[in-house]
Length: 94
Image (cartoon, rainbow, N blue to C red; front, side):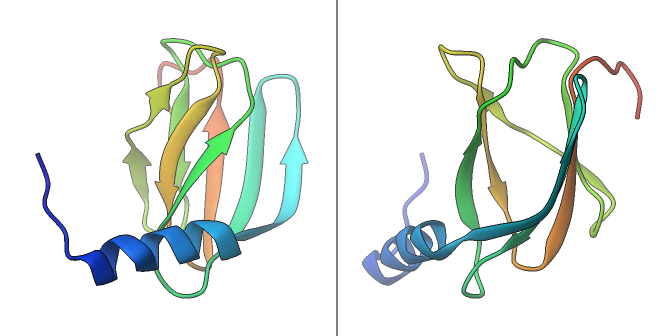
């Protein structure tokens, strides 16, 4: 369980609402994009057909990210302002 202040909770909601995405590039097996928020983290959903071998990578920080697979096989994860992300649907290694 995580406990956050109302200010932090409301800021995350505003960041998620204000998030924009640029440089969208996709193929049958991958997607790349830039995320922009109003400064903090945002929770996003990417409507793809994710599976157990899907990898999400933050190219800016150089880290693989955890994500949740939703019932429709889309994924949700956290993004940061001015970061570039890669999603590889069929990779066991990046």
